[in-house]
Length: 126
Image 1 (cartoon, rainbow, N blue to C red):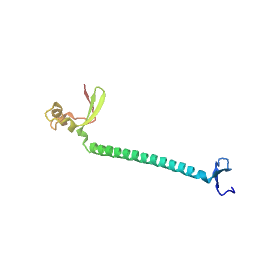
Image 2: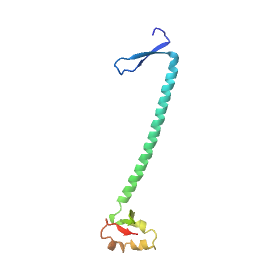
Image 3: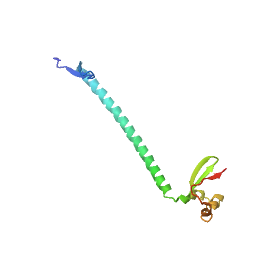
Image 4: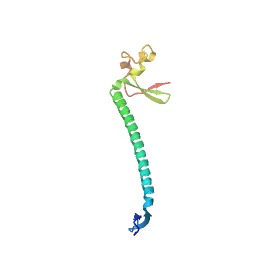
């Protein structure tokens, strides 16, 4: 290492002994470029991961808001159906969107309390 254009670089310390490799100063720009490229790739990966986490957080917030909205409803206003083996849960207000429909009449405020003797039961529909 007596040449001023030479740098010693430590490699591999797995055995407890460092092996030294001689590189020239002319090789340093290539090493610096490689390190810069690796940092750039890492930065891109971190940015993508951050964007994915933000997307997930936004979805979780939407789900949280939905759950808060649904759970704020009285259990008496939640209706469970078994439609040919598929369990469906809806709000009673959804079934009453069309005021003149059979569903609206069946789930209106006058009829519903007498039908709703067990809020957890599942009605069989085909």
